[in-house]
Amino acid sequence: MEKRLVTRYATKSQAAADENQTRIEGVFEELAQKQPDNVSYLVLRLADDSFIHVSFHNHRDDQPNPISSTAAFAHFQEGHESRRDGAVDQQTATLVGSYITEIA
Image 1 (cartoon, helix red, strand yellow):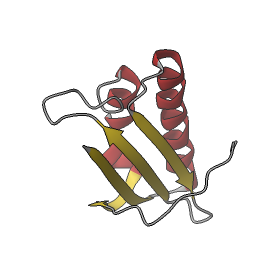
Image 2 (tube, one colour; image 1 turned 90 degrees about the vertical axis):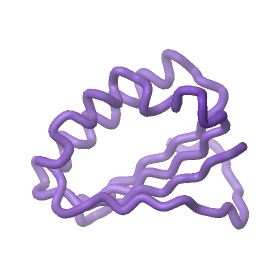
Image 3 (spheres, one colour; image 1 turned 30 degrees about the vertical axis):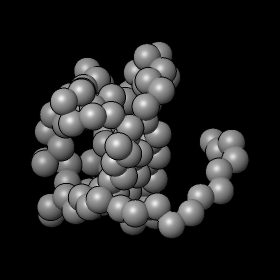
């Protein structure tokens, strides 16, 4: 069962976006260490300092989410509402197609 989620939100300021980015980078560092094989995760910071998270999960509902179960993601969540401007918009998505090469 593959879950596809797209999450969007704005941040209150450039400083808040910088802090948000630092915390997200911590999530990627932990994922790189743990190397879960049932998730793909991409985060974009847009020019207006808003963020888009795209994740593909392949785990059962009774199994832990390989992203949100990390200590770094818990740290990212701490104070998230104070860095954010408005609500989080999270939706499930249907994959129409993909073409992926190595990105950095």
